[in-house]
Structures are given as structure tokens and as C-alpha cells.
Length: 365
Image 1: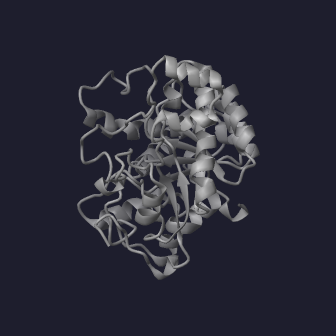
Image 2: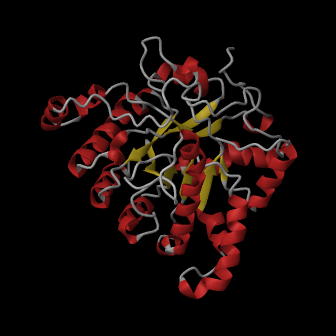
Image 3: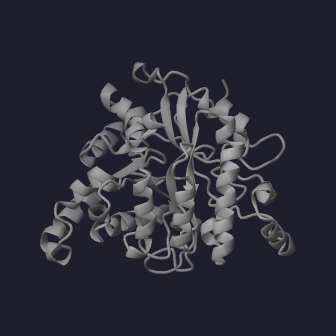
């Protein structure tokens, strides 16, 4: 067993398998999408010499980009080899189901027609090259959120396909996700019982920090949690969950240690400003507990394990955390244990299996 390989049997609570809620499959090159594109758009990409839409959220050449063992012998990008995924995650972790979140540059394309057709081709590629070849995999529907109408068309096209269990958005968006501009996406997702997954990343054309442009990548990386907090506050304050009471939102690669303080601050200020948002008819923390879920990796670990236990307890719900490996990114650094701290058997089972089974309704697929 090499250093990337994780322990096969985590605890007695998960002998039947775990659910990995954030695995990244990568398009090896844009030509891999050509069989799923109309000829017109194949010609367009060729004539404009577009070789890749890979967003590259991790700087090239750094050890944080991806585990070295995840790079195929062919030299293709990490995450592009299904057999390596089987060997390094699905088999050793006894994964019963893994949710693929394909991060591609769809949301960064200003041509809305091209963005929509790339999203459609990407989803067809996922189905053909991943879902049809490995029964343990499910995928998120990649949509071009620049045009909610086109995004809804894609959700309706794939919403009944059991291979797709989520609608994927990126946390940095042109507008806060609570805005009514995005509500058609939520309506379609709720119709099919699909959660909205909001993943780290995204390019909007605006400064990525509230006070302007940063100078260094570390500023960008650390401030991602601020974007997630902003989206949570927007979704609750704008009344999204009152309008769509069955909708769930999963925050992917968001971290979670920031959540307790946000809950406290949100509840406190709502009590003084509730007349401004009368549709928020109960404590924001109660709405968040019911509708928001968060994946485990990356974990912002304090110096002492007991502090992390306290943070998990302060979240106030055992239903909110979902296991994730974040493969092939080098976030999962617990090769001996799937979790960063020892938990009760019941909570461990919830995080590793039960919570994801419920939010993705995998027992129906």
C-alpha cells in the first residue's frame, strides 16, 4: 500500500462502505469533448485554437496541486484516469458511491451559447466515460450559470438520469446566489430532488476580495471561506429556502470551522433586523441546519484535536457534515483514518455515509 492509499476498513460503522462527496474528474484535453459537440462548435474551437478550458485553481508546479501518484503515466492531467481513481480511492476506502464534481471553465466563458454547449458536452462525456464505466460513480450536472435559462434546460435534460445527483455551481459568482436571477435553477433542481453543490472557485470579472484585488495566491485561497459565508447569508436572507422548502445546498471545499461564528452572528443580527426580511420567519441557524450541508475537506485543523471536536459540537447539528476525499487534490492527509479526529461511532457513520445518503437520495438511485 503506497503513501496515497488510504485504509480499507475505517471502522466497524462503515464496513458496508462510505460515500465520497467530492471527487474531481478531469477532462484530459478539449478534444475529448469533440465527439459530444456539434460540428459547428468543433470547428469554432479549432479555428480559435482553444486547446483547454481547464481552470487550474491550483498553481502549476506546486505540491499542493495534486498528489503525484494521481498523475497518469501518460502525462495526462491528475484526475483524468478512471483506473487510478479506482486504485487510489474507490477500492482502498471501500467507497460505495463517489460524487464527481468536474471543474471546467464553463462558467468563465462570456459567449453564453458556447458555455451552454460545452456544459452539455461535458455532461455527456461524464456519462459515457465515467458513469457508464463505473457503477460506484455519480456526477454533478455542470451548468452554465451565466444564463439561468440555458442552465435550466440542462437540468431538465439530465434531471431524471439517476447518474446525476447534484447541480454544480462555483462559489464566486457574478451575483449573490440568493438573487432571484438564479431562482429558476433552484426551481428545476428542487423539481428533480437535486441539491445545489457550490464549489470553491470561479471567476467573475470583479475583485475576488471585498476590498479589491489581492497580490498573492495565499490571499485568494484563504479568502474562499469569505465567499462561502457570503453565499450562505444571501441564500437565507433572500428567502430562497422559503420559496423552495425542499432544496438542499452542499458547500464543497468550503471548510466548516467558520460556521459556528457565522451562525451566532447571523442569529444575533437577525433579531434586530428581522423586519427587513420578514420571510425569514425563524432563526437563520435553524434554516441553515435544515438546508445547508458541508463537505469535510479541506479541514482547518486547530493545534489540539479537542478544539476541533468542540467546533463540530458548536455547529449544532450532526446532519451537516459530509465525507470527502477531494481527490486528486492534496487535501486528504489522513492516510490512517478517514476523519481528522476521533468521533463517536454514531456521528462517524453519519459523516461517512448516512448524511450523504439522505442529501443525495442515493437510496432511490
